Image (cartoon, rainbow, N blue to C red; front, side, top):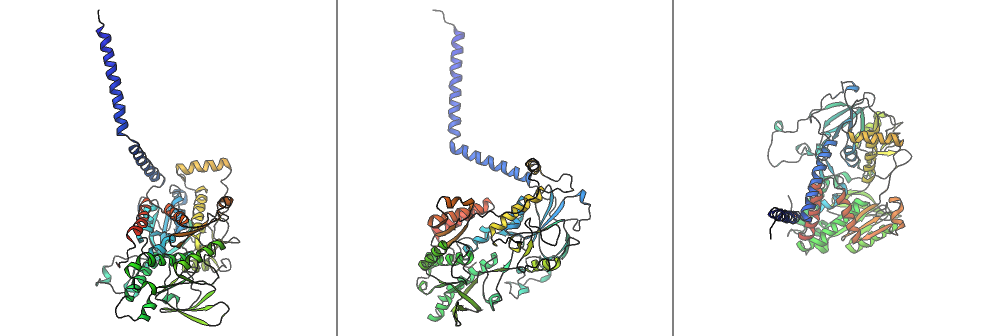
Length: 549
């Protein structure tokens, strides 16, 4: 039978080709499994995000400011926005402002942002200090940062005066001995005073602790607003236990050394007391088993309940959990004086003063204006700025009595609509003000990024270019109450969604996971997110680090 070798060859070649193609597909499938594909997609997304973010937030051409007094005409340069502060409101604003439109300058005595709600965890070593700190230059690379402190303000000339920042680092000036002698002439801290002009000024300097003129607070109590405060409290707690186990101590002296008093029943005071109790029950009872029964933690509050800004149900649950954790709550109690290792109190309705012994006293109640805030009020005029607690603004966050000046966060209050001094309020105000400034017209020809130009065109089409007033959207309140339990109050939050589900208030272990998830998501970078997760796991598996370093 004659055979068609050409057709046979073609068939063999086709079969081989199909076999090779099938084998190649199988090889690719094996090589690019689902795990590899997901990893590749995640990596690609990170690369895209990096370049998009870099495109939207270009780095300044130089880290050294020039044209301090803005001698160039306004139509040949970008408007300069000076932001005072590096807290919640300032960082929220800086992250949203368009650098193609504005020359953005941030000036603060500290060159970092602190995740303040997690400071109580730092005091006992649950979280390490670097975990909740972010460099301003790292999280806002499009911003020119200067570490300095504002001292005066001229609203007519639009000028600010500055001195050297971070004064708390000057150890020898405060009488603190250094470990070795270093000549003052060779110090690296050489920063002259300077003046700077601005086109727009945003004040977000936060607030100071309010002692309510209680004698002895400044000298004998710890505050808990900055990282240095948390470190000082941690050192004091270590000192208390190390001193108590000294063989030369008497039994009475040991009890005094292991007595801790917290003044203030708000979230900061409650969370610090809860973290301190966790440290005792989870770690120190193993390292100091003979001393654990002598530990006494007391929380003093002027009102009758803890977490007054939360619902009554949350306050009740917190009180019950504190009782279980061994924390004594002294409600309706006023602090009359703070002495070294002693707090003088007076109960409501009583004329008798009592004494509470304490080796560590933490003052976590009340806020007041910082000196620069009062200076700004004086420069504008106390007849206009007549609120002694904060700068008064209108509903668009513009400071009354000063043009092109805005204020937000704890240092500001909206006239006729005061809001709580919380990180949530400050962050929302920062985002709002950024959107308003991005939408405003300037004299600079190329005054916006591509993204902002598209956004402005959409605003014009939708009729939303007209500046709107700030509206606070409450997202609920969270607090850690000890023993791996937390409390959440979602009343009037998320348009009443939680109330409709029958969950306006939640407490317990599951709420603690919600608390952790929220603050994990609030971390500003992947670095601090990773560090926070590691710290929480490390504290549970290996315990807290109680060493001095």
